[in-house]
Image 1 (cartoon, helix red, strand yellow):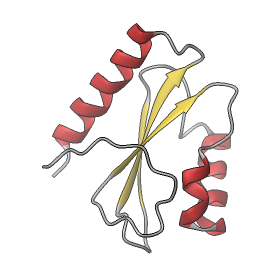
Image 2 (cartoon, one colour):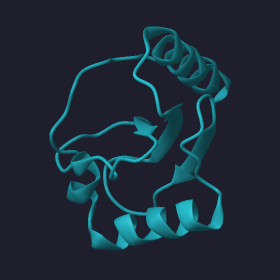
Image 3 (cartoon, one colour):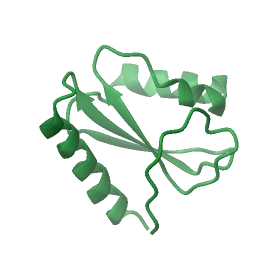
Image 4 (spheres, helix red, strand yellow):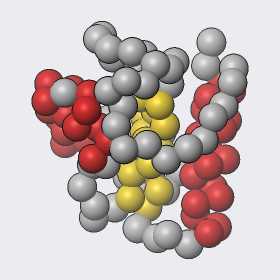
Amino acid sequence: MEFIAKPLSSAAKLACDCLVIPLYEKTKLPALLESLGAETIKHIEQLEKAGDISRKSGSTALIHLAQGNVKRLLFIGCGASTDFADLRQSISTAYRTLNKMP
């Protein structure tokens, strides 16, 4: 699997197997997700409300998308801190999770 790390402002024209989305506590969902459509945003919000997606540091949630060029979203909980150690843990968690995917 090929890994590419870069900031994005829109996922509308992006084609990939998995898009990694960092989630920090006490923040809104990243604006990048808006380009995936209102239905997808609503689904993500429902999953978060149900506890299937967590913002707790080190947590992960993988969801499959039925439509569009992005096949999966991998949510990585980054906690409340922007401390480098927490960020490093989140990146490591994302890397391990992506390596387990088929």
